[in-house]
Length: 498
Image (cartoon, rainbow, N blue to C red; front, side, top):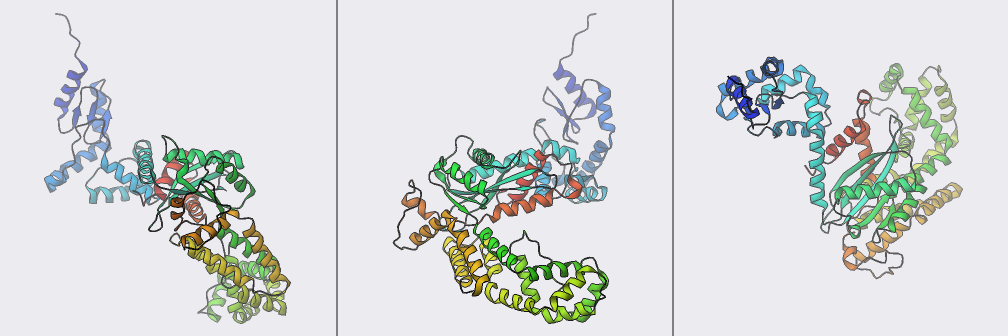
């Protein structure tokens, strides 16, 4: 009697009937395990038997039975569409990425058992989330950003940094310009650049906007570009404005105040040496720290400023001015067994140092606070400009040669920032003042001006995205593929839209 070839649909249905409809399902093309929520190779019967003998499947069956015993409402959802992904896996992946919890943590048995116990769900392997859900989380985040930004006026800020692996990494953040309050901002792109110049920055800008407007960039909706004052950024701004005729380019005012703070530091080398060497004295020296706490229990340890963090050096100088007598007493009681202690002893016995500390705090005491105010994402344009102008007036009250050098630095920084001058004009127009519109983009119309009421004048949001990037790329996560870094970072930085 001749043998007839069994159809694929019949063969798969026979496996479903044999192993149980509560375990497998089929759409006629593939065999799907409802317990593990994966497709199963069904060429031969033994491959199916191999699958159901695996630990993951066995644990899934046990968990499913346990759920059925607890309540029918907690029964694990049966998958009837083999191609459909698990919503639980998606939500789990989304939560881990948003909280910057490495997916690898799911391999920790204690953590995994905890999740299974309280979610009554089978916890997937980290590779399942990485391969099947990370990109989906990224794509849906981008889709939500597109939907929100679609018809809104926006500002854009971008910057680059060198990461721990030596790569030139650039981030691009966009924000919406709203009439009734500060808009939302989103990280839309992070890329590795082969080199950093005005050409690569201009191309990055264009590629990034194509991300939110894939069907065609809405050039007239881009009203503001924010960056630092690096020459290549200024040149890139000029090149970009050719295609975005309504866009104003402003270099970051928080950076500007930081450059003034750097000029102050350069003019007071003795104070700089005091701050640098005092930091070394108490760094990883528990015996010295103990002496410090015994003598001055109510005073914090000397600050450890980072030169690239805005205003921290000045804050340290204010600390030494306030606690100079106490610090001097402590230093004199330490054993003179380090070069840093010798240097500090020489400095604190120099009367010029005390005069320098007095001069810095009395003339520049408000500068760090002004930088902090500008860093706020909720400050309106008029208030931000007022902060800058008030700080300028205070610094112009400083006397002597050093004071004039600091004033000249401040003036030069603002003079080069043509975008800031135009923002001042726009701010006055929003307040009803009659001003000349010379210098504003020619294509600006009356309605465009109204969207600048809460426009930022700093690039702090892109700086914050780099902080998240550095946290993500910790020492034990250097094997991260950059594509996965990008997807994870964009999900993490855009939780406000999820």
